[in-house]
Image (cartoon, rainbow over all chains, first blue to last red; front, top):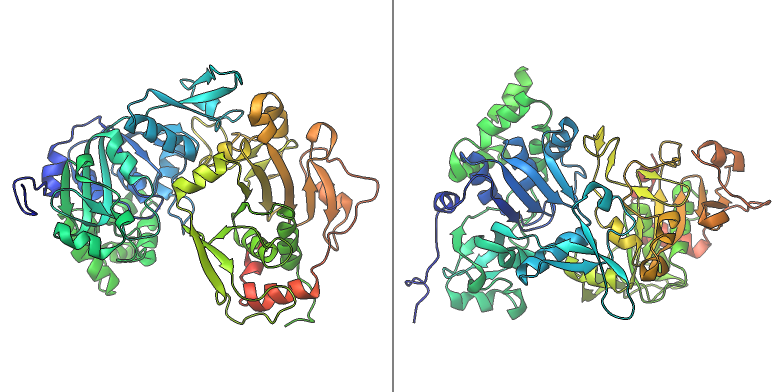
Length: 303
Length: 260
C-alpha cells in the first residue's frame, strides 16, 4: 500500500506539467473571477512556448493574462471579471481588437457543459439560453425536445470536454487529494472530471492524515482519482484570493490592470514579474509589496 | 442623523426593497449597493423570510433589530449565519425558481430585453462589457428586477445590442414553462419606478421620485413609455426605514456614491 511519499505520489514541477501540454489544447481553469485561480500554473503556461489554446473558465485574470501573453485562440465563458475591477482590461481590449474568438455562454450553461463532460454525456438539457442572443452568437448550439408528455423544448448544452484542467486548492497530499478551506468550492471538481488530465496546485502539500484535521470532511473536494499531477505553489493563487490563506492582493491587481494601458505597459509588467519563473515572480511581488522600486513602475514614471 | 432631508439614494433603497415585497422565502440576489441595502431593508422589515448572502457563499440573517427595536451601531452586528450558498447551489436554487435577482443593465428596451454583454457588433464590439453572466438563465427561471442608477436614452434604448436577459416579447415566443417562469417585476431608476404593465407587457411608469416630472422621465427614455393618467410620487421612506438605513445598514453613506 502506497504511503504519503510513496510510489503513488503525483508531485510534479510546474515545468513538468507544462511539458505534458501541447499547443491548441482546450484547457479548463478552476476558481471564479479573481478568486482561487491557479495562477502559478497560468503564469507558467503564459511563459511557455505553447499557444493557440481554447480556455474554458469563469474568467478572471487567468484569461486576461493568457490573452495578453498571446496564448489564446478562443475563450469559453459567461464573463471575465476581476471582481473589484468589474471589467478585465486585457480581455476587453482583445475583444475590441477582434484578436480572440469567444464562445459566450450563460454562467449556468458553463456548469452544465462541465457536468455533461464529467458524466461523459454529449449534452444536458437546460432552460437557460432560450430567448437570449446566446443562441444567436453560438449558431452551433442545438435545442432538444423532451421525449415525455410535457414536450418542452430546451437548449442542449454540449459537453465541455477538456484536454487539461488547472485548479488551485489550499491543501493537498502528494497523491492528489485536494482540499479547499474557503467559502466556495466553485466547480473545481467538475473541471478535473471533465478533463483528460487534471493538474492541482496547492498552497501546501501535507501528509494525508493532516487533511482531515485542517478542515471538515466536506472540504475534501478533489480526490486522487480525479488528478494527474500535484504541485506545491505557495502564494500560487496570487493575486487572486485564496482565503483563509490570503485575500486578494488589490494593490497588485490594480498594478496588473494598469498593464493593459498600452503594449509598452504590458511589456513592462511582463519584464518585471513574468520573465523569471514562479520564484522570480514571488520575489518581485514581495519587492512590490514592500514598496521597493518596481522597475516597471519606474519605467512608467520616466515615460 | 434622522431628521435631515430624505436623499434620492434613500428613496431608491426603499423602491428597491419594495421589489421583494411578498416574495417570502426566496433568495434575494441584489447586484449593486443600493439594491443590496434594499434587500436587507426588506428583510429587516416587511419581508423577514427573504434569504440574503454576504456577497459570497454565506447566507446571513438579521439576529438583532427588527422594525421598532433599537437599531445597532455596527452594520454587521446582529447578523447570524444561517446557511451556505456556493455558486453551484445558487444555480440549483435559480433553476428551482427560488430566487429573485435585481440586476443592472447597460441597455434595457421597452419589453425588458437587457444587455450587459457588449456594445456594438458582438463579433467585434465597440465596448466589451461583463458578458451575459447569468442573465439568460435568470430571466427564464425566476423573477427578475432591474436597478438603473442612470436613467438615460443610452440605457433605456429602442433595441439592445446583445440580449442577455430575456424580455417579454421574446419570452412570449418560447411557450412551455420558460414563458411561465419568466417575470420581470420592476425597474428602479434614479428618476422613477417602472414595471411591465403596459400594452403587451411593455414598460410602464409606476411612480416618479420627488422633484421628477413625467416629462423628465419620457425625455430620458429612448422609447414610448406607457403611463397612467395620474402618475403618483414614489413613496418616501418611513422614519423607521430611514433609521435602519442611516444608523444600521449604511452608516458611512456609501449609497450616495452609486448615484454620483
